[in-house]
Image (cartoon, rainbow, N blue to C red; front, top):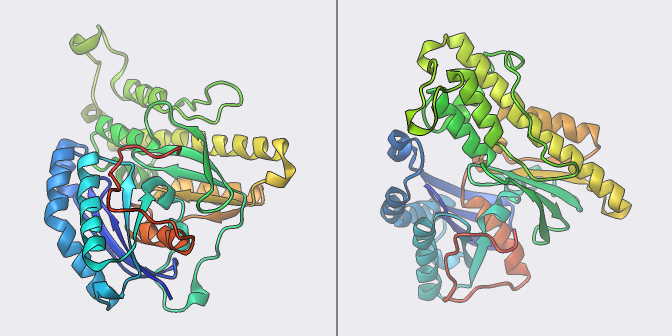
Length: 363
């Protein structure tokens, strides 16, 4: 049996988790900062860093307590050290290094984005027989969040190659900006998702950017601009002197719901179309490399419309879909500790000079 303590502070959640044998979640503690950042309609790095400093030790202590173990019982300490807000990352990395130094336990560095692709493999269950099935490889990986929209070709949990990414906004960022345009508040994703269920997704024709033929990259800036014009009309003048015809307050509740539904339909449709293009290209290039699984992770994987479309897509293309339980879609430390188990078994450890890094390595 292997017990790993995971720590996650890449953005605005302070999290710690104890995971057994890479799959069974014994504790999953998350201190969210949404209320701190809501008034700013986005994450403020300085505020996030200070909140992490206040929360990190109590969160780790609570995680160990809920798991029913002492720090000496863990076999290794893992931390998401990339990518993310550098000030936030430093807090988690410093805590993990201090614990590893004081206990003599191995230290494992984990890529936060890579961990999102492992999140579907962990579960809070008592019986190992109830665990979700492990994915078969090769697989297509898709991370959709506020900071990332990236497609991956995967041959194992650790053999990952990025094959497509956003060239501007991440899809989660587009959701947050759309919520600002619609005056829905922060965080935008859950609010648009809920409101979209009350609207007509065909009410407004919004663009689905595919970029050049064969491209697996994403673009959501055009969709965001199209929504702005649909809400406010085309501006008179340019720059800060521009005057719009109207604002979201001038629209009825049903019109706002229709706009939310139309935006969501366009955003998710663009993602599904890229998945279709990815499958076709992989099957055409090498039959042996034909994907067997579709693995999705990241905050936007909680979106109900994406989950429905992904389920239909996987069935149509005969792929096994792996998508996290809702509690593991947002940033969490269970995915960090779970993936770290693979590193532990492969003897892949970091030393105490391990840095916090704002970007991913080759991802």
